[in-house]
Length: 639
Image (tube, rainbow, N blue to C red):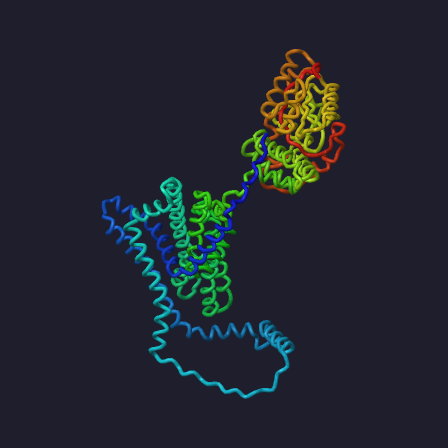
C-alpha cells in the first residue's frame, strides 16, 4: 500500500507572486471609484442575462430586449425608493404625535433618577471625577461663533451628498447596458486575454461563475423578498406605524451579509418603542424577527441555495470585512458574489488554487489524510468517527483499504524521518489500535483464525485491522492467543522491516500453532524485506488476504485437515458477513456509528483503550498500531 504523496514544495517565484498580489490589492483600493461600479454592473448583468436571453428566444431584437430588462430593473428600484421616501416622510410628520408616549417610557426607565440606568450613569460620573487629573488654574477663553450657512450653501452640501451615489448608480446602469448589448464581444476579449491554449479552463470558469452567481442572486432575491414581505405584514398586524417602510428596508438591508438582517429589525423596534403603549409590542417585534429570520436562514436558504455559492461561512465573514474596507458599503454588498468568483477561479486556474483552499467549501483534506492526521494527534475518538462515516458509506472492507492501510503505510514511511521519530509512530499506532479494537467483534468462543503481529506497535495495529476485515467477511478471527488455542489458520502480519531474528521467531511460533500460515505485508518496506527471504511471497492487499483465507479454510474443510467441522453450519457465536459494517454504521454495542452519538463512541473507545493495555499476543510484540495487508500462504515444511 503506497503512502500519501508528500505536499508539493513551494515555488521559488513566491516573492514575485506576493508583489503582484499586493499590487492588485492596491489597485483595487485606489481605483475603487471605477472598479466598484464595474463589479456591480457585472453582477447586475449576470442577474439580467436570463431575462434578456428569454426575450431574444422569442424573436425580440437585442437592443429592445436590453431596454426592456433595464426598464424592469429601474421600475423595481424606483418602486422601492418611492415606498421608502413616502413612508419616511409620513413617519417624520407623525413622530411629534408620539412625544408623550416616548416621554413616559423614558421616565419609567429613569424612575425619577432612581432607576438602574440613572444609578449607572451617576456611578460612571463619580468614577470619572476620581480618575480625572487635578484642574489647572482656569483660564478665560473667548469663543468665536461661526457664521451660519446660508440656504445656498446648505443646498449645495446636500447636493454633493446626493449626487455621489446617483452618479455611481448611473455609471453602473450605463456599464450594465453596454455589457448586455456586447456580451459576446466582452466574452471573446476575456478569452483572448486568458490565452487561447487555456480556452477550456476559461470557458469552464466563466460558465460556472455565470450559473452559480446567477442562481445565487435569484435565490437571494426570492429569500429577501419573502423576508421583507413577512416582516412588513407582521409589523402591520402588530400595529407598528409605517409597516411598508420597514418591509422595504428589510428586503434591501438583507442583501448586506451578517449585518443587514439585524439592522432591519432595529428601526421598527425603535419606532415600536416610541409609538406604542407598554412593552408587549416591543417584545412581539423581537419575536417576529426571530421567527421570520430563523425560517429564512435555516429553512429557506439551505433549501433554495444548496451549495450554489461554495463558500464557507468563515470565509464569507472575512471576505465581507475585507471588501467593506476596500470599497465601503458597496463592497459589503458585493462580497458574496466576488468571493464566489474567486473560488471558481481557484478551481480552474492552477496558480490560484490557494483561493479554493482558503475560501471554498470543499474539504481541504481528503478523508484518508484527515484520518491519518487524527491518529498523529492521538485523537482516537474523531478518527473512529471518520472511519465510521466512511464505513457507513462504502463498507468496512473498503474503508479499511482506503483509510487504514494508507495510514499504516504513511506511518511506516515517516518513521525514519528525524522530525517524525519512533515516539510519534508508536503513539499514532496505538491510537489506530484503539480505533480497531473499538469496532471489532467480541468473541464468545474459540476462534478459528489467529492473526499474529510480528513485532512492534504498527504490526499490532495492522493485525487489529486484519481481524476486523476477517470478521466482516464472516470469519471467526482474533489476535489474542488465549481466544484461539487451536487455530486452523495463522495470519502473520508485518508492517515494518523487523529484524530477521524477530521474523524467524514469529514464523517458528506460528508453525507451532498451525500448519497453515499466511503472511500479510501492507507496506512496501515490509513486503520488500519479506520478498528477500527464501520461498516467502507476502500478500499486500486485504482483498488478496481475504481470498487466500477463504481458499485456505475451504481447503481444510474439503481435505479433512485441522479445520475440524468448519465446512458444516457456522456456530451461533460466529459473526455473519457484513455484521461489522452494519454495527459500525449503527453504533450499537462496542461498535462506532457513522455519525452522531459521540457519547457512545467515547464509551466504546474507553473500553478499547483499557483493552489495548493488555499484554501482547506474541512475545516481543507491543500493544500498538499497524495496518495490515495479506501475505501469501507458506507450507510449514518449507520454513
